[in-house]
Image (cartoon, rainbow, N blue to C red; front, side, top):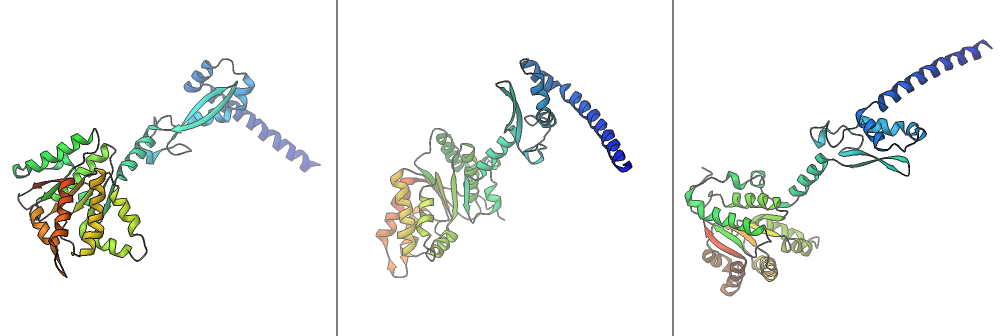
Length: 308
């Protein structure tokens, strides 16, 4: 009998401690400023409903509200990362729900913007380029002016014409593409930057798994397409006519802009595109250049080599 009495006395002691702790926690919850304000706004709530939902009130009390206790999304302290608690009353019942906090909204917006710049084999430094970091070299002023004019026009809709930047190595042609892509994402416009030599290899490899049409269709429909270093790729009549020709034809018909960089002027590029293993194909090369003129404006850049 003694062990039973000892167990009963132990439970009673623990139960007393539980009651004491319960009353203490209840007092802490109900004396919280935000909880007091909430209850004051809903005087119709019966005491039984308040007592029944002390756990919800405690959860609300201990959570960060709209990032007031968090410095960023990654350091969110809440039970559900990036969500802020909301107390509501419906039919004299207390409900606790969660809504996205400011930090999470900012985080998602940044992620969405990052995804707007798609790249095929472009270096990281180009993908981080900004228009603000373009120096005021007078020899590049015309190119910068055209770039800024495109951005201004893009605020009211994507312009139908891009820019064909050409000039020697190291004058910043590719940097311009990266800077433009990052500026456009602020306007919620997506862009795709393609390094042409790797693009050729990508298309050839895609023939093996029958994904070539799907990939080509993606590039055709990008908001703003950027082809870096055109003319540097290994030339073939198949790529020129079936891939590049098809791509440019679609964007010309749909009024979608294309940006290019090249070491060749359009006239020089036409001669380059005409050279194939089977001979000189002037007409077909000329057809490509005519499409390029419809979707881009030729701008030379002759400045100092920044790679030295």
